[in-house]
Image (cartoon, rainbow, N blue to C red; front, side):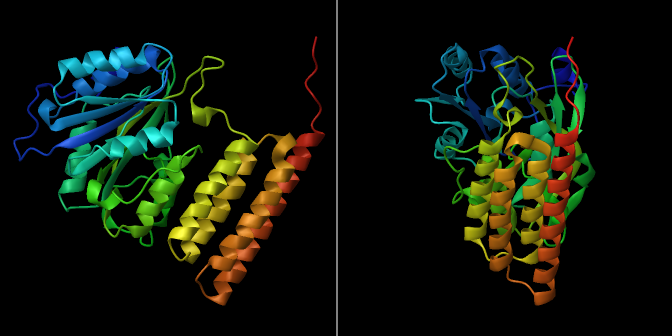
Length: 341
């Protein structure tokens, strides 16, 4: 993957960033059995076109059973500004939460231990968030596989935008990954990732969007997310089913508890709920998922602080999505099974 790390590297690479005031950044790197990818991941941090001494890496080994912790220790010996935490296996959320407890810088980036940062990621994100003192800056994300094939993620929602809120640009609510972003620490210090669930990005990022008045965005890829292809070694979000749908609803329920729900939030959560069932829940599990979606959508509508006409529109949206997903699922069941030789 050498090509990935060299992509977008300026001709005069050095540890000097910008000729402007140095800004220290913490990079939280949760790691669990990433031995195969970890060296490439950490090298992509070393190779940043940014003042190397300004990058404070906090690597959290979440009870790995391979050589991940050994690799982390070797990198921490090389860099005095890098540190590691070794914990019993508690999951991605707790690894990130424990990393957040160690933050001493003004800005934070989340970076998973099997992914890669393009060489100008940190400098691009720092410029994006600091020029108007925003709460968060969002960049683009691309998925890649072992063949080096790239696929943009949610690119249609990316723009070069400064200082907006979710009410001014509702499409922000489609960009709920926690990586590929830079955060002002003061804006997230009271947030956390919900333990023991996946899709933990949803609660964390949506909660931040709801409280932020100044959000910036750059239409540039700042993060490469690995799609693992080895059977039995897929990343968490590559294995989706009824259980992961329940986890998604736990995240959404917590979002509803944090703030009075307005029409934009209710509409988005209802749409995402049914979209997830359609795309990710197996047909054999869709019926119980739809029952859960009905209850959640009803809760969204009840809690929505909006005009009666908007509540009526939400009910219509819910009924239409329910009918659409149910119909598509029934058609899928009627398809003949593939013939086997």
